[in-house]
Amino acid sequence: MDEEEEGGEEIGKRQADDSNEDDDEEEEDEDDEGDSEGNEDEDGSAALQAKKDRLEGMTYAEREMYHNKTKEKLADLANQILENPEEKVGLLGHFYEIFQEPSATVKKLCLLTQFAIFRDILPG
Image 1: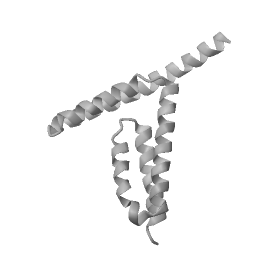
Image 2 (image 1 turned 90 degrees about the vertical axis):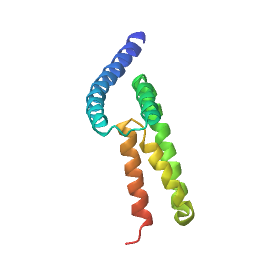
Image 3 (image 1 turned 45 degrees about the vertical axis):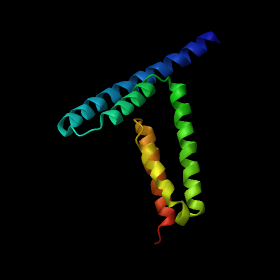
């Protein structure tokens, strides 16, 4: 049973290493863009970097738990908005906050959730 657990951990580490390589390439691209603009708020970029570091330090299982919690948060926001869109339209701003997370998966989930909400509340 210990060998199976070790094998599962190795797979998780390999998957995490593979995703970290992709993230490193994206970070290099983002760094190039940030140099040309020079307008970024230092506090905001420091907070974003701290989130990136925290995300990169997570194991595969921790990342899955993080994504599941985010899915629940997005679903809860969507349900609140869809219950009464005219009064709860202010909650749409929370999607922007969630979208600022460094995880590409979270960004995709956030956009897809917003799309589903808009599709449901807009006429036609």
